Length: 466
Image 1: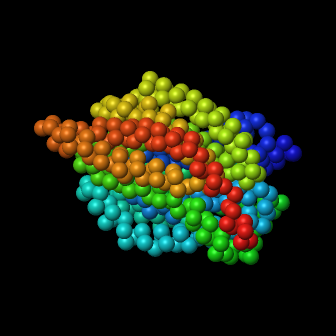
Image 2: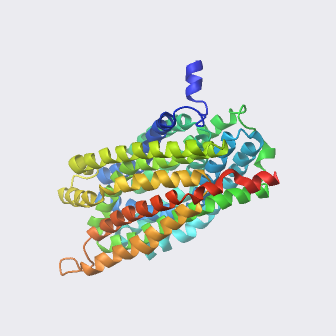
Image 3: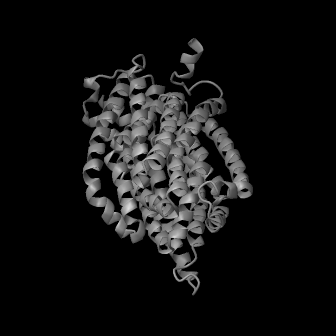
């Protein structure tokens, strides 16, 4: 029992061999991220197999809008994760407790805002990005159910982020596996047995994520040996709110920029017709799994850097960065090889339409090498965020996405127009993404080596005021 309790206990990443701590933390979180991605993937498989390719395209058109409307939670979660990891590393119970409490309160406010505004903005946004009339109603219904029921999604992401900041990536994994299993069962039940279509997979996701959020809350409530959780700690104290906003807003804006680019490029994608929309959905679902290790190592390095910065061990931060980067690049290289040789079998899971499988595989070949570049970007950005520098990654995202990727996508589409492709070749979307990933890796490496991120550490202003 003692061994089992130790597995689920917070992990102190300020001691031990850096690469071992990184791997120990990453493995449960990687499995968890894969399980998280299963939510969307199972939705797509069930819809594609039991409803049809048009319904699959409807789900794909809805997702960029979904992520754009959830940037508030990205901001709160990022600020929370950084503060929690640094205060845990510094062993400051008071600041750790108040940070967690304020995050819970801010999440409630943000969830209410999303729930209220979504019925008024969802359909206009889908019309704005040229969603085909044939799938507009399906896309609208899918989005409305997800956004009106966003409480589970919001709190799971915030609370699991807090658990990771404390070094506990295993508990979030277990809760996520439970809810993912439930999501699969409900997807099949609602769509196959009750013929609920797109609405059924959305409802299944809402129910499953709500359960995972409740499990995270119960786990945190029981960790009273680490921090205090009571109504006093839920008070939105100005200094803590402002610190979370200061740290989180750049990451929230980064997500908003990324989502806005997705919405903008989705408009271009929609102009190519339903077949390309459906192919894009399949590629992005496979991409979600391929990118999971990169995102995982990025979050791991944020926690690792945050705890060690809080403990004032900057040499250990740099040592861990070198080792974490080597691991991430190695994993991404293996994934790239797998996609190039076996990607077609992955595409065939989503549809039995040969033309759609071939189109999807052609697009995936363009992206595959880019995952190695993204490994560099995610690890180095994660370190900078963990140290408290969330602004630099925001600017990098702004430059590579808005000023580079979006114009390049439309430019390539324009110059490749022909009688056969009046709106340009659909490959334009994926070449622009590949070039943006490589460009982003180069810029991120430059700013990391400059070292200005080290000056953002330790929350000096909040430390003086409290």
